[in-house]
Image (cartoon, rainbow, N blue to C red; front, side, top):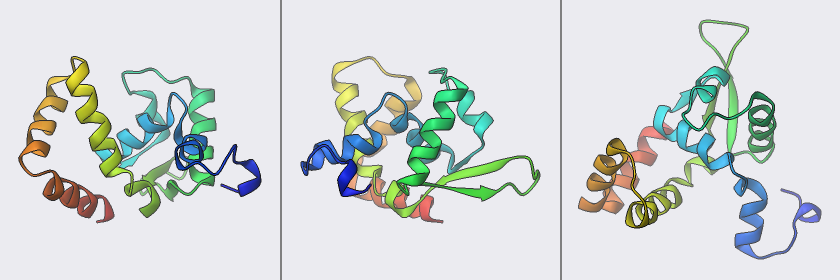
Length: 135
């Protein structure tokens, strides 16, 4: 993000300028879970993002180099999205947000199971997740 578009030089503020809206981290979550997603895959998420918002957020994340577009191997009409190394670097942050949420809210059983594994060896889990996303 260009310095002229930043509200301040605060690291929290600067980061929120990129992914601090209601939807961006959910898009990143979906890409961490599936590795690659089509536009339609994002629309199937339980949170129910509107198509116009999804298009805007995907473009914003792409412009800020957190995600990238790839050609779809089966269809010229579709594209695949995946995380860039910059996006993959958010894995530890996403884990910490999930652990915080588990402490204060009821969460889905599949997320509880994943966090149980995280708690056994957080550094090892994060390292394995990053390795898997980088291919």
